[in-house]
Length: 612
Image (cartoon, rainbow, N blue to C red; front, side, top):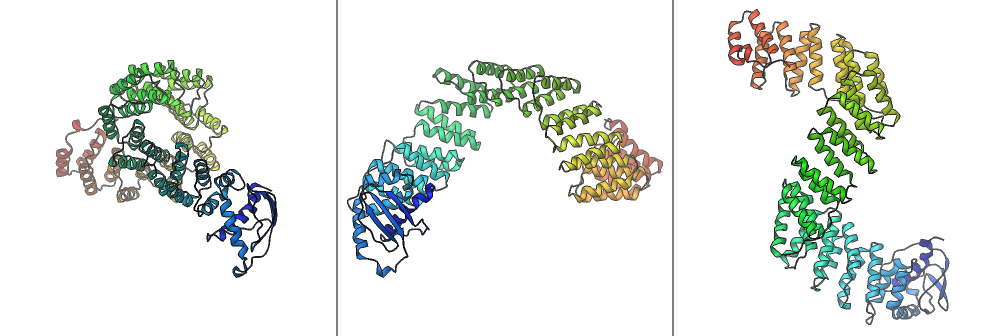
């Protein structure tokens, strides 16, 4: 029989007793026969629902039918009085320490305290409070906080910490407040109690509540210690209120309070985040002079501060210092240095960071690999990116989904189409089957080549993997068909795109307008332009050139003039080709005043932007 079933008879016995103490016990179904021990020899009981047989310290009973209340024996009340007198601290303590009966601790205590001579002692208080926390009897715990004042007791910090932490975690703030208030009469320990409450709120990220407790301490005139300041500074920092952190730091300095390691770390981190790396370094050195060994958080904060300030030499100095101190176990520090080197066009040093991570046995995450690959691509070009990727793989690095997607884009840019699709296949074998960017890159590649079969082969693979195509995929296919003059297929793809709820963007409309203009369906092209504008779209130079061409070829000069006025009002600058196309349209049509307006508005051709 498991623990819950074994405790059921004692629960039944005690609940029957407590029922006559005018309490409200819960009703539960229990086994009909059971034996268990008590720490004293109880009297013989004959209750209305349980028949007991007593032998020394053993009680054996059987559950019988519930009798009407008026038929209960006067003997029950006499036996209950005996039971109350027998509940001593020793009995209650053993009840709380016995696994099968500890759940009854609160109920037994309620019976015991009705006896005028009962006084809870410190050992039993600790056991009772712990039991009530473990069983989450918050109401009883709040009542206990009100009772212990009459006993002249206060909990130890271990018990108080447990009560406050668990009650705050369960959002039982009235319980936490009740136990904190009883400590206010103890001048030596009340600050510590409030510090525990603040720390409990911090653990569940209730920063406003933490700050509220701190303000109450100040209003009540508490002598705040460094632990109080540490907790409130951490709460303010996590809220992003860096200036207030520095205000409290200044107050600590004015009062001459000695900083501890946590306080130093918070100040270093805060100074770094507000863009004061030199001041952060000064506090960091002071921390070392005071005999505190910086941890990985302090080193990372300082390195990050210098990295943000692009002070590579200082960041390197702290990085090597952290390495000597044995604090280079956090991948975040390596990622910070890696990104700094990449941003500073120091790709070899960035690769050196990755090799150092491998030497130290630190796992190379996909985030690290992607940062290095993208850095090389941006600073050194696709050829060097391919070389560094191959070196990383040869060193045992395992690319993830993001790195694979980036490298597929690199191979596409180099025109290595088969390699790009092969890498997509390798990626899928390793379980990365739902990366939209990777599929879209390969589909766009084949669409640009006009290879319809290959593009749709990859598209079907994408759908089979449960990966939904995005606007990039559909725009690539639409662009492929419009350039081939196959507008029926382009319309079908567009219809599927809209059916999936994907919003048509500027790229979609530009491809369709260009396709219909190319085949001479100017009404359709201009209609699509008006739909685009109705949806709130803004025209860029690429679309402007296509629309001007549609208006020109369809001899719609009034609409062309209105269109040019609109883009001029929107601040769009014309490049040489667009300038020449629009001006020649008016010249060829012999529209002199439109020509004068155009030159006055957009200037002569030499003032136009160069073509990209």
